[in-house]
Image 1 (cartoon, rainbow, N blue to C red):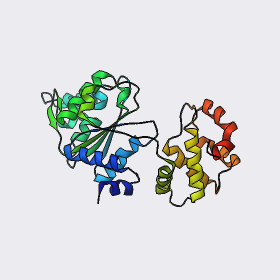
Image 2: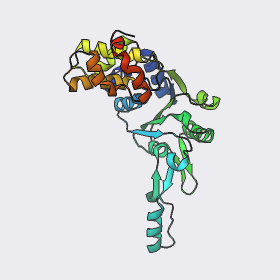
Image 3: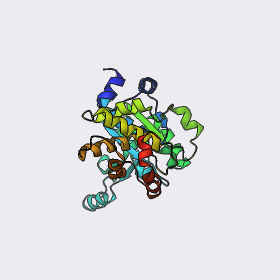
Image 4: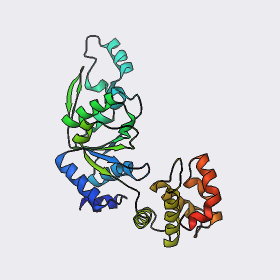
Length: 275
């Protein structure tokens, strides 16, 4: 099965450029750096790829101050102390005491893995340098234990919302793709992929509303997931057609901020007309 078809079967609609770039990344064992607005499906691609390839997914959520113990490995110190009290003189840094975190866990998968490094731009530059070494050499050196090399192929996907510039070294190491907001027709296809039972009119109206909201000055514009939730909510409430009243009942599926709510609620009829 072609990669694009396998991703579609896993619930992800990828255009040909993204599919080709990802295919090249797999063939060359190169990470893929994804940028684009929050909510366009960057993170979801990793899960779909893991399903398509039949590999486990290991996700590392980056944040300010993240260090090696959260990303690479740690030691089960409590178990070490208990065991060493009974068996003095044994090596306290054996494999059984090693706690793999996402980066090391992905390398240790015999059949390979998909590694998602989510929002890498939230981590600091020192962490980015460490990550570059892991991705570049496909191995991790644990000082007390030794070097752990990748047991199988690891396809890494890095996502960034551009909260800070990434280093040139990291960008050179990765293949690159930017995911933009989908055109309404494409977004409708994505919604139908997840909710095939939804009527065309309902899907079209939901996509029109989401597209109009993204053109407003909102704190959190709705992502594709929110569009799907809007349709899913309508189905749950047995709403066949979106009206201003129906949209008000469902506003919590697509608006996630108090200021945005105040901005949007008076304009519901306008949204249904497409802006």
